[in-house]
Every structure is written in C-alpha cells, then in structure tokens.
Amino acid sequence: MKAKYVRYNNVEVPGKNLALSEIRVFGKGLGKKPAKVKGFNITRQDDRRDASFKWEPVKGAQGYNIRWGIAPDKLYQSWLLYDVNEHFMRNLDRDTPYYFSIEAFNENGISERTQVQEVK
Image (tube, rainbow, N blue to C red; front, top):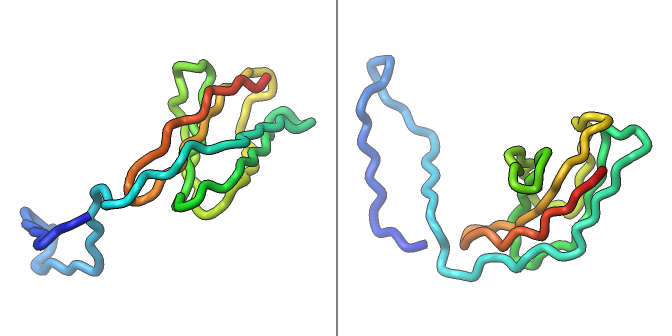
C-alpha cells in the first residue's frame, strides 16, 4: 500500500482533550493475495458439539477465515485465526448438519474460498 499522508479529522470527543495512541490504516498491499487453502479436513468428534479442523499452511498468509453455517449458501458465521493451521470448535448443535469453507488472507487480499463441505 502506498500513502503519502493520512488525515484524521476529529469531529467530537466526550471530554475536553483528544488523545490518540494508535492509528491503523487499511487497504491493499502491492503484493499477491494468498493461494487457495488446500487439504481442508473437518472431523466431527464423538461429542457431536465439537469439531476439529486441519489444513495445509498457505505460504504468505497472515491468517484464515473459517466460514460456517446451516446451509451451503448461508455461511453467516466465521472464525478468524492467525498463524495456525488447525482449530478445535466446541459450539455446534448435536443433531444439526453444518457446512464449512475456509479462505486465507494477507495484506494484499483474500484467497478464493474452498468448496463448501457438509459435515453431518
């Protein structure tokens, strides 16, 4: 990302003085976005409320979004993970089938999502 200046315009603060300790600027970098995640495996545990996830690390990825939901076109929930290639989830319903997909991200963008997988 290139920027010469970043302008902050304070509109209102609840007290007399304004104090800033950090500013984050978002945008897209000048490199390539990460490749699509490969080897995304999901295992529902004996306690059906739990599921474990593993995948191959993607070179250059800062993190991953596991998207999930109750229908393949309704992946409304997500779990954001940094610097790992496995996860253990303990918040599912026992008798509900779920659908999952994963994508990698870095400062240059977001990879293509994996094919949606149903886990009964």
